[in-house]
Length: 242
Image (cartoon, rainbow, N blue to C red; front, side, top):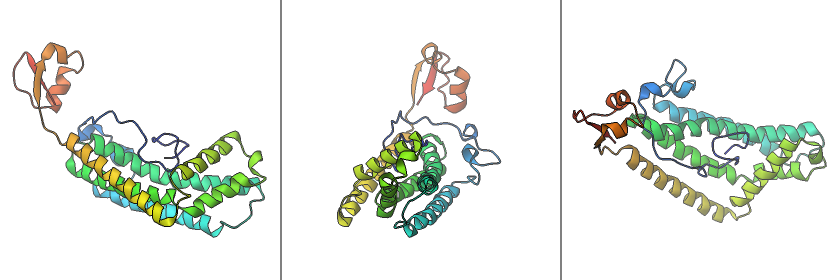
């Protein structure tokens, strides 16, 4: 999503293009819940906080988008102007990434179904919002203004790469399409997220258990870890996995 540097590859407004290795269900006590919140994220102290943080992130981004829209026709004549525009675009992505990455992790690993449900709802909400960002013509125009300005060559190599890759991602995600076609694309993307979420929930909610030889299981997992996290059959030569 965010090229500098979000967990979702080198895409500013991406939300799905990353490798999943399957769910790893972890006890809530090991998930970093502290006085600062789940995963040490401030104000993430209960499941409902996910949607609140997601809404706050969108509000902040909308304010930044408004600033960009109001300046879309302003000529770029200084390096400072160009740098500020790139900073705003990166800030938009940062605010979304901070929440959606945490939601993605939580919905994959948390043992509490309420946390997973709230994280999944937040993930879906922000995925739809990211699709809206991908279709924001004013963001794209302002970025293009930077790239096509005489100032662009004076920017750092990192800034130039950031801008060039972001422009390519906008175009790959259909910024050039007509309004109706972009809306159809957004709906298709949302449907994919819904299917992905259903698949993920089916995996994490599975309660199938099976016994394996203890000496084989202990080559991978400590016995005390399995006994503390999974119900055991009580057979001394077997350990129960899920």
